[in-house]
Each structure stands twice: as C-alpha cells, then as structure tokens.
Length: 78
Image (tube, rainbow, N blue to C red; front, top):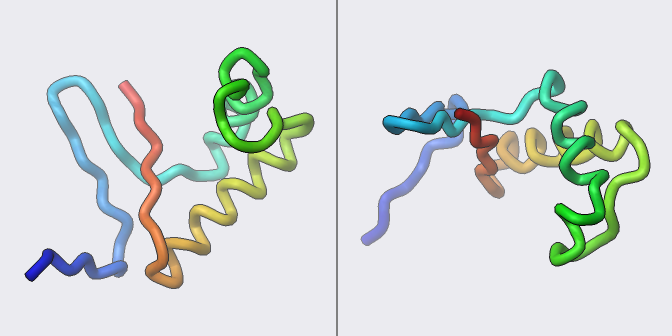
C-alpha cells in the first residue's frame, strides 16, 4: 500500500542545501535562460526554447498538472 498524496497545497521541501518548491511565473526568465541554451538542452527531448512565452507555457502546464492531481514538478533552488 503506497502513500497517497493529497493535491491540496503545493508543498515546499527543505534540505540542508536545497529548497524544492513550486515553480511560479517569477521563475520564467530563469527557465528561459536554461531551456534556451542548446548546451543545456541538447540531451533532452524537444528543442531549446526560442522565446520567454515558452517558459510561461511550461509553468502554466506544471500548474495545471498539479491542479488536476496529475503530477507534481518541483523547482530546485539553493
């Protein structure tokens, strides 16, 4: 019997070095900077981002996935 996660509020997890938290619209520029860099994304599926709008769309999809209890995707910060 597994642990059931209730998708009521996005959790924030803290370790000694990292914070795992919800990705928000404030993160769009950072996501674009990473996902727009071919050297970062060359081994990922899909192409690197060409516009900031793609980062906003990714954040929106992440939020929608949480809202329908489909997935939980964390942003990792120091």
